[in-house]
Image 1: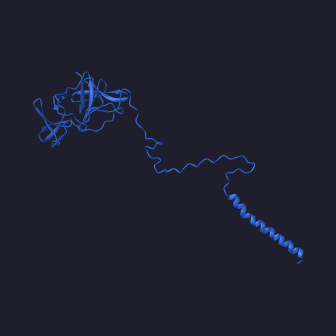
Image 2: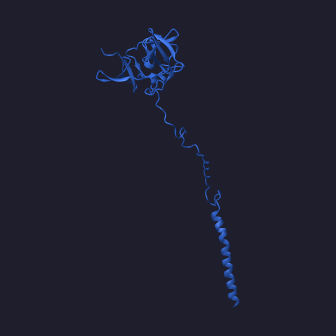
Image 3: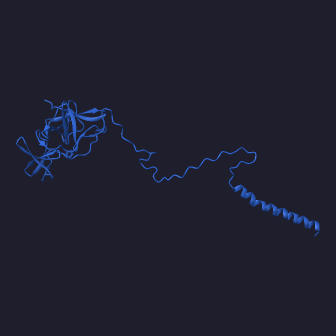
Amino acid sequence: MTRTKVLSRRATWAGLLALLATVPLSYAQRTQPRSSEPARGEAPRAPAPPRAPAVDRVNHGSFGHVDNPVARPPAPHPNNPPFQNHGPNVYVQRDPHVDFHPHQFWHDFHFKLRFHDLPVGYVRLVVGGAPYFYDDGIYYQQVDDGYQEVYPPVGAVVTQLPDGAIAIEAGNLTYYYAGGAFYVAQDGGYVIAPTPIGVTVPELPPDAVQVSLNGGVAYQFNGIYYEPVFVDGVTQYVTVAPPN
C-alpha cells in the first residue's frame, strides 16, 4: 500500500472519530435546561411564573367545604322569625318550616288507648270531683282492667307545662297549646281553659279525626273542629265551633 493511501485512510478514521466525539456533547446540550440568561442579541426573557404548590385533597369534596357548601334552609319570612325559646318547656312556634315539629310525648295520644299500669312519674288530679292521672300532656282515667287515655279535661291544673308547649297570643291572653289543650297561667301553675274559637294553631291535636265541614275537609278533636289554612305558604289550622 502506498504512503498516500495510508495517510488518506488515517485522515478518514480521524474524521470519523472526531465526529463521534461531538455526538454526546450535542445531546447533552439539547437535554440541559435552557438558561434564563438571554442569548447574545436576544431580548431579555420574562421570568417563568412560579408553579402552584401541591394541594392536599384528602378533605376536598366533603360537605361543608367552602367550595361545596351544604344546602341551607330558606331565610325566615320577615313576619315569621325563627323558633324562639321562652323557657325550659315552652316554645313559640315561628318556624318557616312550620309543618315539621319535634316529636313530643303528647304526640302519641290516642283517645281510649288502654294500659295495665300508669307511666312512672304520673300525677293524680281531681277535676270536677272526678279523678284523673296526668303525665306530660296526657291524661288518664281508671277503667276496669287498667287505665285509658282521655281528652284533656277543662279545669285541670298542673304545676308546669308539657314539654314543647307552644305559646299562642289571642286577644289579651297567652295560651300554651299542647296535646290539644290550651293552658293559661294561673296562681303559679297552668289551668286548661276552654278552647278559644278562631285561633290559629301550627299543628293539629294528636289523634284528631278527619271530617267533612262546610263542603270541605276539617279535623275534629274533643268536639272542636280545626280547618286548614295557609299562613306564609305553610299549612296551619283555625279552631271552629261545632256546627249547630
